[in-house]
Length: 127
View 1: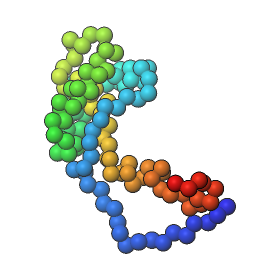
View 2: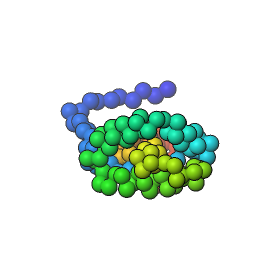
View 3: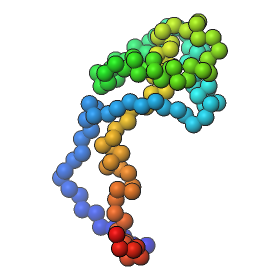
View 4: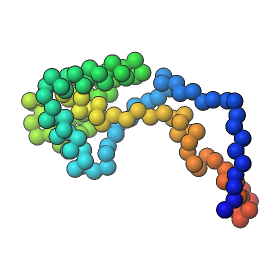
């Protein structure tokens, strides 16, 4: 096994919360999505409202129209809810928040392994 020498640099990468985006998050399959929704539906209305307030206070300053994003993401999974008419607006937003993923494009660029040259290029074709 080949050892790689690492030299520490003074340069530090500092995160910038203003440079993240939010995306729709789907947990892999319908059953997992339904499980998430069921957990939110089983919360008391007070708990749901409290959680939504905490989420908004933590993330609203980083994203424009965050409630609109939550509403849009709720719409993506609303097909899994039998009777939507009984849900409060806060609970719909909370469900949408559980299907929202914060994503840093810059971090993906830094940590994508395909962007790093492998130290041993001997057996590769030119180019």
